[in-house]
Image: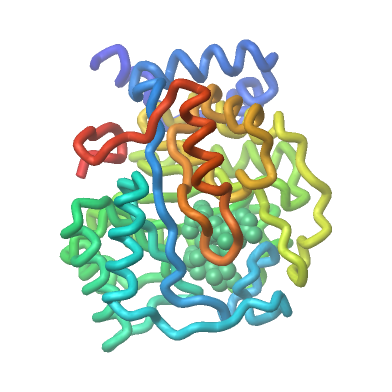
Length: 330
Ligand code: SAM
Ligand code: DTB
Ligand code: SF4
């Protein structure tokens, strides 16, 4: 493992990141593959399932998000689901091959009292099914982070989304610093960090390098790095954002893989708009996780039949519950 440890660095510079991101695609993918194979199996991806446990009506104004109360997107608001509803969804996800279950709530910050108590119970019950459990609930206090850790939470998802410089063009109701402060509380509570971003919001390549720099200079690296391709939702300010060249997504994934070798790099939102070939390239570039199931949080996901067929055609498979790797050390 000594040689492999040497690949893990926390002092990446913007210049180095740019040089990696812009290298000839065959070079980039070759290097990403080399790194990938030191830390992960090349024939396996982790299947994760998403569930929106509280949908819509969010006070934040994230320009990409269909759940923001600032935009008219036709999303029907719901109250927090019951524990039983969540456990039933997690059981179904496990039966479909997911080993990680991620619960999302459209909150600016986690509420206290009985609402939070119910979330903690969801975490305990899903964990008891043998699944990794991730939550994304907005900002957290230190006490809430500790309570989630005690309930058995595997990871907390809180994305930086883009560069610090571009952030204000996407979200005005909170700051990059707020985001970093929550991540710090998660880390201090001993919960693994799931933190990534979105491409296709009109950001420049430079903004992507800066996001990657923010992630790859954290010590330790986020164990889980979701790379989302913007899902353009009618009614949001980004509904008409120009589509991003798919090779930019491939470059983003490969660069994340090289910068953060041991982390799970997750090909997250946006797969529905990708061809099978583009998805295969993303996997070749070092992505080792996908969301499976009919839906993401509020938008449709790539259909399960299509995913099964694609993995079979590629000679790949979903990681099973018994095997543990990278962020999957339960
Ligand atoms: N409210 C919590 C928060 O913002 O941290 C949790 C839920 S939020 C929906 C989780 C993440 O989903 C966002 O940080 C963003 O990166 C991603 N996301 C939301 N809408 C998206 C979209 N339309 N396309 C791609 N990613 C999206
Ligand atoms: C993440 O980075 N992507 C997921 C998860 N974390 C919570 C969310 C994607 C949401 C896509 C838009 C929707 O379905 O509402
Ligand atoms: Fe709210 Fe999260 Fe959507 Fe932003 S991304 S509007 S915080 S649900």
